[in-house]
Image (cartoon, rainbow, N blue to C red; front, side, top):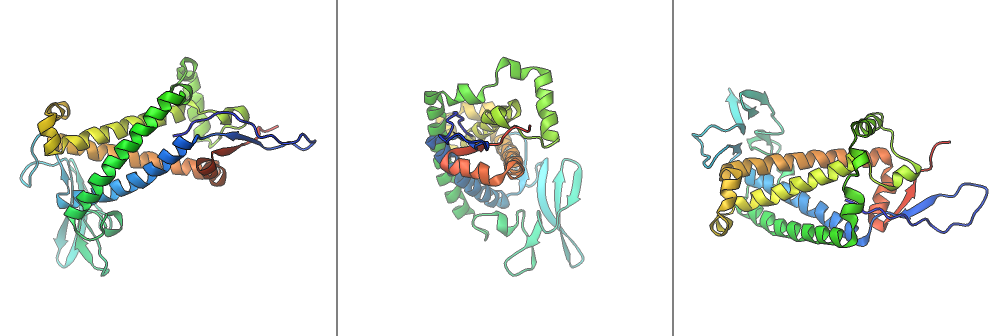
Length: 286
């Protein structure tokens, strides 16, 4: 997430148009962004390590081998051939090499819900995975609180992330959808502020991250003892576990789309602005 404040660079006037540079991201935005990148990467990989211990998801309070899972990663054998499978409801698809059965460090197929390259640590080690997950989960929460607090104090939340009434008009939203579908990125004055789709995406992922934290706390027996209402809020520990997985998957989808937009919009300018804060405004077409 970013804070945009116009601060044109002091360039001498000349006949040739000068590049306009604005101070796009404050220091707290840049620091919390990169801390989030590290935390989410480690949380995702250690979370998949934890999922390996029981690669099935349920709704309700209980979840065991004999209960009905709505999502399951497993492997079957057809003679000497090991086949990885993923079952979603009544639909089963073969996912050998990715989910259910994948190649280990020795290059041989092994029964494993998540591949070695996607988990932390790469070997089967639930205890270590949980330690990585819990440590970076608290760091992630603290970083998020710092970001939210700084956004409220500086006015970043109201100024840059909350859509204006005119931006919520159907015609305005559809026009932004159409521009994105054509890969038409804003230039000039329009590039200095977020469009309504960006604002909606950032607010949406903020909600997803809040749900990730709350459902993660719901799976902790210690937190259950202190705040038993969380179990009722999410319909049981297994439901919380499933919502946790779904929110993590949607967040990964957001990250993939976000990275694609960065590459298409100009990765050097976009990444540089998140490191230095300075952003070169793309000039409007004449």
